Image 1 (tube, helix red, strand yellow):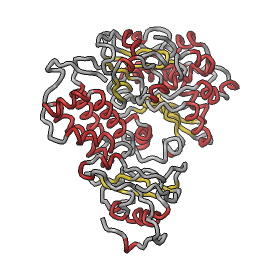
Image 2 (cartoon, chains in turn yellow, blue; image 1 turned 135 degrees about the vertical axis):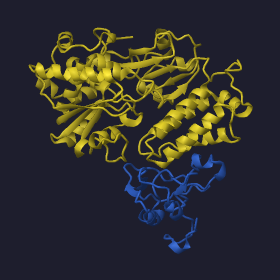
Image 3 (cartoon, chains in turn yellow, cyan; image 1 turned 60 degrees about the vertical axis):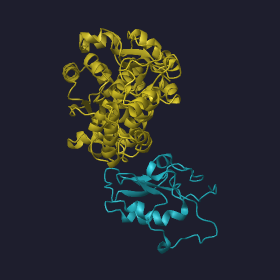
Image 4 (cartoon, rainbow over the protein chains, first blue to last red; image 1 turned 45 degrees about the vertical axis):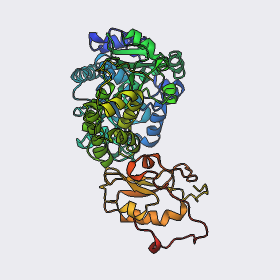
Length: 415
Length: 121
């Protein structure tokens, strides 16, 4: 456990004021140093924290080269992932760090307009950001040029945070993904090149602007440098933590007070992520590059310990139902495919499986991905595929014997 | 199966998934490269369209009632070459071992197939 973006007073103490923020971190560097910010971000190796892990410097660069001074920046704090809390905690406790990042981004890419995109369920975060914006306009002695900033609050929705959905909502009030290309960095808000960047990424960028890329790279224990916010559940101390990237899953389990046996299944990345299990899995470092090589993903930093007592089939069926209900109902393979997946999972979980349900689930876990405008079908079937692997015996017992291994107290062999 | 290489057209098929309404015309006109799932939505064979099928692919594009199909320039060269069966097709019980995508042009045949000789789906 470390402290960079969450350095300072504990997040539970509420929003840090502008004065406290300035006193703690000092001013941003001057204009000449800021002119190199995109290169500094590249050198730091900062990866986006919204889930996809795209390099931040490269993203800013691709907007900057199209902007001609007319770009838009959008801070993405939609956080629709049910298992993630890190963005709302960050926005509610460090609003000025997020706004520093947003203004730096606007200057670096050449934007005249900034949008704070905050899920309407995150009331505390929105209040903190509104107050912070007022504080900043009252105290304008700072070096950074002011960017007109508005707040947009999409309705509660899993997919509202997808970047084309965010742009769509700001443009027309409809938080559903659109067909890409054109991607937001080509044609986004008001038809202008738009940088959509997760709020945590912006907070890290604000620190890198102050302390440099070498400082950023001092943190991190494996391949990917830096620290990251994670949301941990399944232990006696659930919540949002900042970790050095490369911290192992086992270490995190200790900090979070997880009592489930070592090697018990863990859901990484959220409903969009994947399940892993086994002692080897618990030794894996939480590092985007290493996790990807091991067939899983860091995503938005969700680490949910599933425990030994919960039936993985039932949990998976519930998630599949949630995801099917989250479909924007625009693309056929998603509308029909995810509903079929959810229904078959529910039948298997409740001991009412049709004869070929499990076989069909296996097929759908491979055949639906990549066939939607956004990646909801990919994320959902990816999780399904990992569940079919990790809980293989449970699925088989539910399907063939209509019997839950957990409820019948039978030992589960974890992969 | 044959390992002969098909000539790469440098183009690939792209679907506007939001616009697509499962008319299925594309799969009927280009069964070599487009299959339908159980709800009638297209599954496109991976890789680029082989050169000898480009004309047929264009016809499929033009015939889509909702203009959801496009033939676009491939960004990076993608091998069209060796053509294993698409796992998603093979895994489906109703099409066990389904036809491989983009079959190479049969040997000793005229390079351009006449459309009236096409097998109807």
